[in-house]
Image 1 (cartoon, helix red, strand yellow):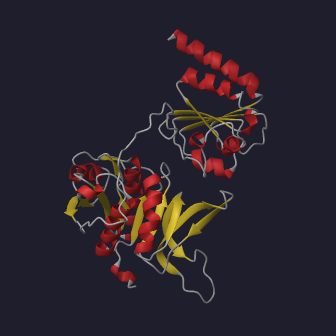
Image 2: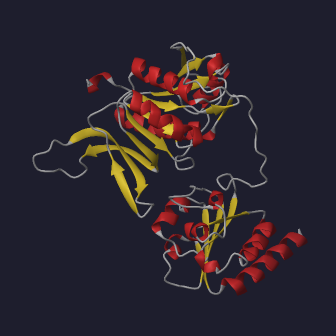
Image 3: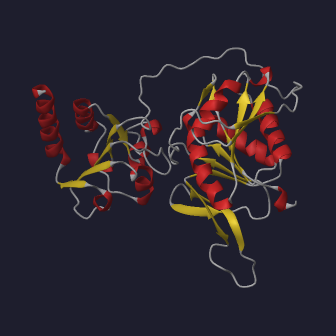
Length: 347
């Protein structure tokens, strides 16, 4: 493999029902940072049916070029045609870096594409940067420069691993939604649009979709919430989460939780904040009964305002909190909730 042939940062621009997913804009934003370090452009790969008009939206968020693979076989996501489409783009255009969102679609697509093009894949990354590998020089081993250093949780989130792929291209990673920042939207921005179709011949590997049934859920995605009231093991019991529910209702927030709460079976996985849960950036984050383990902090430390309530004054959560209250949450939360209700009633 001639590594010099591979240039540019490519992003899989996921769309569902001809609506671009937010992770695509986040990846473009991070791709711009990586491309700046490498002195190259960012290319979005848009796959679907009748998706050409979405190219302008990708350009508005920073894509320099958009490669459109448009075919009726790509109307709904199916593993085989999408893997064929993305692998064909990589084989023709030879990107140095290929980023895919760690969504349900991306987690299915990424490994299959990497296997087809014989490269590595680092899954569920929380940090990406350009640097040297090995990070620290090793006697007798060449240190390679301008490598993609991909950081992800390992061993169940108990440690952090930084991984590189120095001998194969492209360097591929799936990236957890909510971790990277979108670039500011620039209305009217244009990108170079190229159409590419490798041809699709359905075979016995093509799944036939008979019906799509969309689930209806009343649960708010915590990644979209502006105010989060998050509880940890210190809440004490699932029944005590009613105190958090009351506070969230008083301020128009959403309840979330730590991994310990999910492990105990008190709350569903969808509400978990942290390295093995979801990464959130609300305007206000209440950390109630949460000690502040590094795995949890990684999922919420970018919040605009962090308010911690914990009876342990030495809890690590106070190191990142903007405001901290040391005391019994069973006494503090009812008073806080009542005061907030009084303020709202006075408006």
